Image (cartoon, rainbow, N blue to C red; front, top):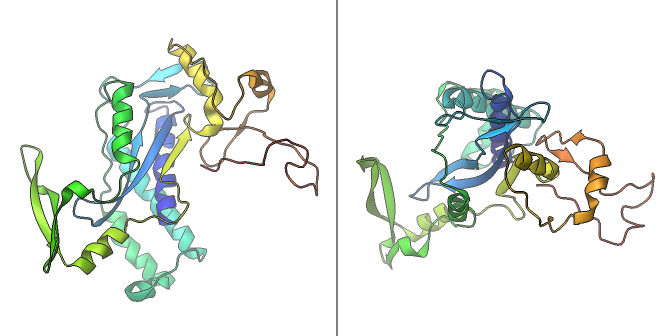
Length: 289
């Protein structure tokens, strides 16, 4: 649940600040990937986001590009991310959607939980914006590094003996010339397993999500964007959308998803009391990502 709140807060923050006319004034999209680990297998939840350098104007008639070396102010993003995440966390607690065990059992009390959040409201939250990618291939290479990795690769394992498990890790605090020092850490086998299992996500959890213009329901905007930026349109239709349903999509009403802001698409209509897909030839399916 908390990982889900992190996803939503991060996406809402980017979409909200980008839509503000004081900043970009455009509808943007993003692909977000959840990471939960640091180099030493510690619990360090964070979201990597790939965001196009611009977005559609409010009327959908113009592509608004960001400045060459600047996208959005990170301090403004940081403050809004902190507020949105902590608000969602407090609402989840008030609704009884959070459960606490062991040493954290006391946080079930409303007052104790509110006191626990006070330092988080004062701390500076980290939002880091990297320089643009050097083309589509670089974007794919970046995604490939961050999508299907586990907390530690076999290449970082050094040895296993009576002392425990030894592995290489990067010490960013002892960095020299912006490069972290590579060190070796040895943990008892039980502690190594405990840290590793911190990063096993719940079954069925989506650790890669798309929002705004990159959400599944907003795919009709992509063709318009390609036209606006004079890009060559793809001649291949998405696998789950036949190439000849363009007229049907154009005639469908514009309904925005309340979660990601993407365009919702009607896939079936059925009468009250009728089970879904009783008259269609394909199984009922819905993309909840």
